Length: 606
Image (tube, rainbow, N blue to C red; front, side, top):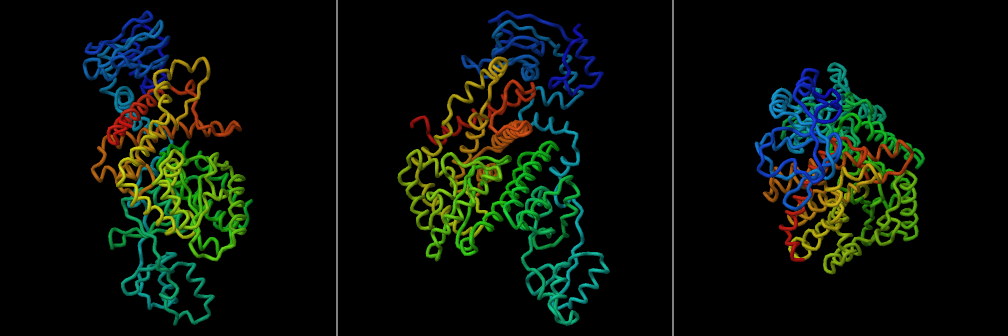
C-alpha cells in the first residue's frame, strides 16, 4: 500500500491522522494508457481516482467539459449517485491512486468537510472552505447581525428638557448620547451638542435640548449584518446608529463597540478622508484603503462584505477629492457619479476610472472652471492609483460631463440608435452610483432609461447579447485548464471567462424587470423576489461570481506585493487542486446561466 499519498491536496487536507490511515489501508495504484476509458456513463464506480501523473478528460457526449491533472480527484459524485454520468478518458498516460468506495463512504460519513469538498455543489464547497479559516474574529464579524452585538440602552428625553437636566442624566447613566422626542419626531443629542450648548452663550438651565438635537437619525434593523452597519457609518459619517424594529427603538450601536471586532479601524480612514485639507493627505488614505482590503481578505471576509465597505470608503474619497478641486457652486449644482464595478460596489482593488458629471440646467457655472476642476479630479485619481479609462469614460472627457438636458439627449441617442458604442455606454451607465452633489440629477436620467428601454424587446436582446462578447475564452480555457499550465504559464482573464457574463447577464435581467439596484447581489435578490429567477440558480450565480472575484483579488494582491500592476488575470499553474475544482464548478454555472440568457432573450435568432 502506498505511503507517499499526498495529504496536502484537497479534499484530503482536512483528514485527521486516523482518517489518513483509512486512506492508506484502502488505496492502490493503477496505470491507464492514452485513450483508455476509466469511467463510462451508466457504469457503477468502485473507486475514487486521484491522479499522480498525466491528465484525464471528462466528456459529456462529444464535448469536453473538464480536465483533471496531478492531485485532482474524480468522480466523487458518481460514487454517491451509484453510477457515472460522464465519460472519463486518459488524455495521455495516467498513473492514479484508486481509493476503495467503502473507504470513501467511511470518510464522508465521519468528516462533513471532506464530503462537501469532494462532491457537493459550489456553495457547499465554499462553505466547507470557510469553516477552515483560522481567523475566527473576522469571520464572526462577517456572520453576526446587529441585534447580536452589544447595544447601548436608548435613553429618551422630551425636547423641552433643559440642557442641564440632560447633562445630569448623561452623567448618571454614563452615556454620551440621549434620544430627544419632539412631538412626532425623534432626534439625538450627544457630547458634541453639549459643546455647542456651552458655546451658545444662553443659560444652560433655560436652554431646551430640542434646539440643539439632530433630527436626522441614521437607523438600522437588528437583523442587518454588522458589515452593513459599518458601511452605513462610513457612508453617513456618524459614530452611532439607532437600532430600531419598525417604530420601536431597541438601542444604540456605537462605533467603538462595532470596531472592537476589527483589528484595523476603517472608520479612522473615513475620518481622515473627511478631514483632509489637501490631496496629499487623501493620497495617503487611498493607499490605506488598499491595505485594508488586503487585511479583510486575508482575515476571511467575504467578497460581498468587502465590496460594501470599499464602496463606502471610495465614495468618501471621491467626494472629498471633488470638494477640494471644485468650486462650491459647482459641487452644489452638479452630480458626480461613478460607474462600472465601482458603481456596483464590486471594485476591490483600484481599476480604471469610470466616472461622469451631470450639470444642473440653467446653473450659472463658468465653463473654464468646470473643465479645470474635472481635469484636476482625474489627475488626482491618477495620483491615487486609479489609471485613466482607456475609453475615456471620465469627467475630464467632455463627453462625460454634460448638462442634465444634454445627458438626457445622449441617453435617448443610446436607446434610439443602439449601435455597439451606444450599447456599451448604456451598460456602463446603468451601474451609475452618485458620490457627490445632487443625486436627484442622476436619478432623473436613470428613470429616463427605465421608461424607454423596458418596452423595447429588440433593444433588450441586443443589450443582453454582450454575454457572448468573449465566446471562446471560457470554453477553451475550461477544457484545457490543467493541461497548459506547465508549459507556457497561462493567465486566465477572469473577467472575460466568468465575471463579465454574470454581471452583464444579471444587469440585463434587472434592466428588463425595472430593478433599481446596481449591485449584482441586490439585483439577484430582486429578481428572485419578483419570481424571475430560481432561488437555487441565483445562489449558484452569486457564489460563482464571488469565488471568481476572490481569485481575482488574491492574484491582484500578490501582484501588488511584488511591485507589479494589477492585471486582472490569474496564473492557472498556481491554482491549488481545490481552486481548480471550484473554478470548474464556477465556470459550469456561467455556462448554464449563459444558456438561460440566450433562451430568455431569444439570442439564437440574432
